[in-house]
Length: 372
Image 1 (cartoon, helix red, strand yellow):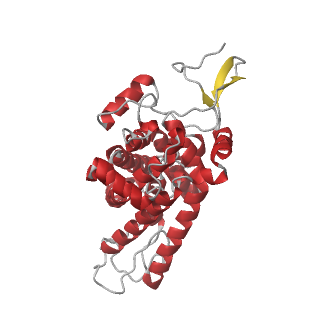
Image 2 (cartoon, helix red, strand yellow):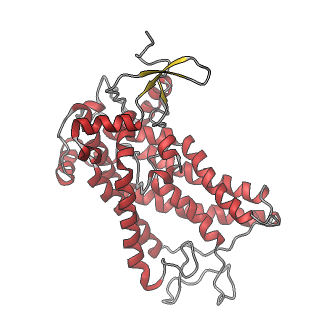
Image 3 (cartoon, rainbow, N blue to C red):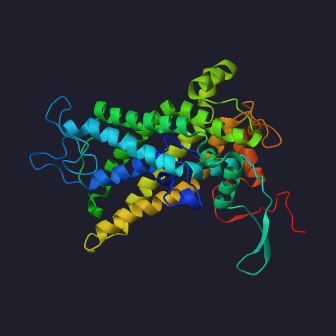
């Protein structure tokens, strides 16, 4: 967030919603949710006599399976794999940063260009705000092409820290290997396994989110300086000093609660919905059952990410609210007492999904813009 997060990729927070809707965020969410399904599809190792009994973690020969049997996540390849994930995450983060940057400026209500008149499908005249591409061109005109990557450094550090944290937690608390149970007669057992796996993913996501959130706050504030042309937050170390001096330790965790709530709702909503659909609606006798189940997880990720977008929006707004930057002060934003106050304000204004769409942005009825 876009925003987001331990956001290795905005697509993870809602698939294609990164461009058309609830993106940002969420990078780790989609990966965490998909991990449950991936491990569930893997068969148990052949040498185990009792697949339902986890191997003692103290055994040196014990191998855990992260998405594929005997894959990259085990043995001596673990450090190399972790470095590969960090490098891939950094590449995706850098490529998607302009998208997240424009989304954040829209989230805080910065509209430097007037809307244009267009027509809807019914032929009626409506006002459209600039799309992502028009907005990005405006940023290039003001700051040059390098301006599209404002705030990238702390975001790269945030995502790398999140990835390393998740990898370290998997080593310290290795997940139990499970086999897929899709028969309706075993629904209770299967549900228990989904709950167990989702709880494990939730723990990893919450811990990585908390550790990486201070860098996320710095990244958000670096980006919104575009609104007032400030230079208060110019580097990671200097930003850490300013935040600690002005706001104390809690200043690094503003907006954390709505982000955590959004992560939890996303994980449980996505995994449980996909599980029930796959168990009740997808028959094992169907030849394409496995393919359908994989698409079910993807579709549920998009749908649930749209529903949890307000948590992302509120968390990002709280990260920049009342921090001495123009984007976090009136008239752009009231000074919020809490994230609940922010949520209620956006709800009354009908702006809980502001910034969720970056292509077709119609002017809302309560906007100051009007057709002449």
